[in-house]
Length: 327
Ligand code: DGY
Image 1 (cartoon, rainbow, N blue to C red):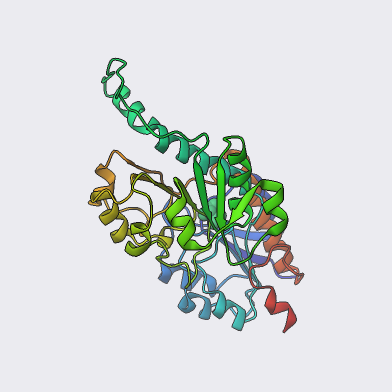
Image 2: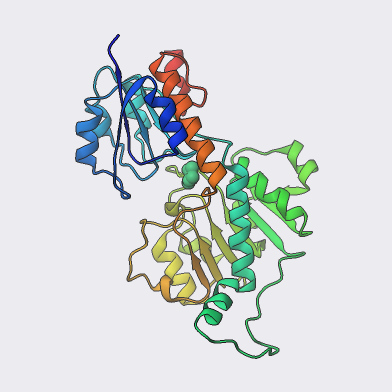
């Protein structure tokens, strides 16, 4: 039997790579930044399977160039908005992803951002590291209380729910909006289902947990930011394009809302000239919500599980386009 050829677009956990090397020829992109669309096009034409990351442009153009024998695209992320699923599905290529394993890690990180922003921890730590320790004063670095405040969650999937579970310990009023109502969870987690308008106008903290789709693209725009409380803090660990960046700049410059903590941005990386980078009430991290040692290892293994299943012609355990199996 001919040795299978695999391409991985970044160095992933070595144990996961070893599993693949035992039966396939594995080629790994050595860079820390993603390969170009042109490079991916050439590679995908030569291999039986690829493991990709959310920064790789798996456009229709790239997928259309795939080797007719390409058995699987396995993405090491829960989100797959970088992949043209329609083209992959039309070509009968299963696309794997890694839901579930990163839920708690991402929820922890959302809370880390929320607490840092509310209590100005990032600002305070920066001042201290710069040698500025302002003496204790009634107004020094005062922030917002989290305990007892209202938390709005847009997108009540796995991560949104995990964020809500943590909020119960802070005695918060928890509001959520989602295309689907989750009546069972409303009792269990003491959460209230709301319209988007209600959640925007009532939340002290608004946390975004939606997938990026045509409906959620720039969901948070100028009009919606204007509906929020002046004291509201916005947290985004979903996808950058859920927020219109120009509208957010406008809202923060004009004090329409009080601050933002963003792990994702449109585009990534955030342009160096963005005024948001110079605002004290904005906390920006470089898309690291799932970045715990254990979770990244589990994601790599899950991506390999999907890849192996695809190469063996089996149904992927975690498939983003299961409709290909009903064809
Ligand atoms: C994902 O998996 O989609 C996150 O954005 C990164 O882990």
